[in-house]
Length: 323
Image 1 (cartoon, helix red, strand yellow):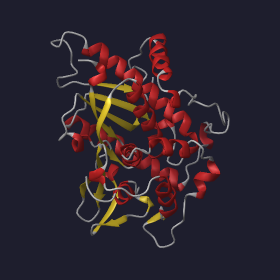
Image 2 (image 1 turned 45 degrees about the horizontal axis):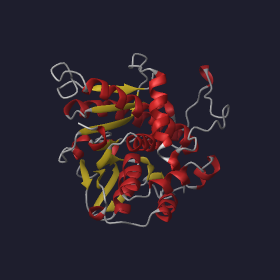
Image 3 (image 1 turned 120 degrees about the horizontal axis):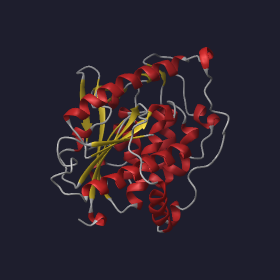
Image 4 (image 1 turned 90 degrees about the vertical axis):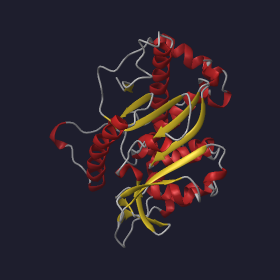
């Protein structure tokens, strides 16, 4: 099949600021000629996926890549009434200034936002109604943001029960289901591809996409974000909550993925960035692009083999992690 005609069901997982890697994945799919037909997202995956489905990803990318640490802190409004450290209103107001509320069922790309109903202890898939309300519910990280009350439910981050919601995309028929897990461990044995081949593919794509030809990977704050080493490493309350959630979500994600396997699974390591490291958006976008490019090249190599020897259409699937 001609790659230009391949359609994709895209599943974007939860993982805080690391979700900026989702932008890189989307840009790579566009540059390589794939057509994203539907998106299912949890938490930051719902946010990025919602902007893309609404045709506003360029605006969001421009906004988020201009943030510095001070800007990020300015978006966090402390809550004094319980339920979460932050209310989340300032963040959502900033996002709504980029894209006005839309009705999900009228979006040009099918979209599903996954949240969790606390009282009923089950997933909720939003495929209609307010895009703003669905995303607000899906990003309500427990203990960090207050639960969001919508449709008579108290809703929190979809990643609590389904960090990579592949099942939410299964009703759609496409050539490829590609999922992104943002809470993976590093895998030193991840498959490596010829860097010259990857660079050639990347340059070819960029030459045909002028608005993305500007270098995404900017060398900034090179020494500012190095973690302390040894015993002096200390965890803040927010970071401890975040690490605990990441550990839970990575385990849960692989349990869910064992039941609902995508054709391609991109494993983004949790060490790429923390919960609020949006000031590192450029680097995360670039990392997502490179991981996706490696995934697609490897998929193409396997897909051109004898179908009887290929495992991409059987039970076993390949995963792609940061080397």
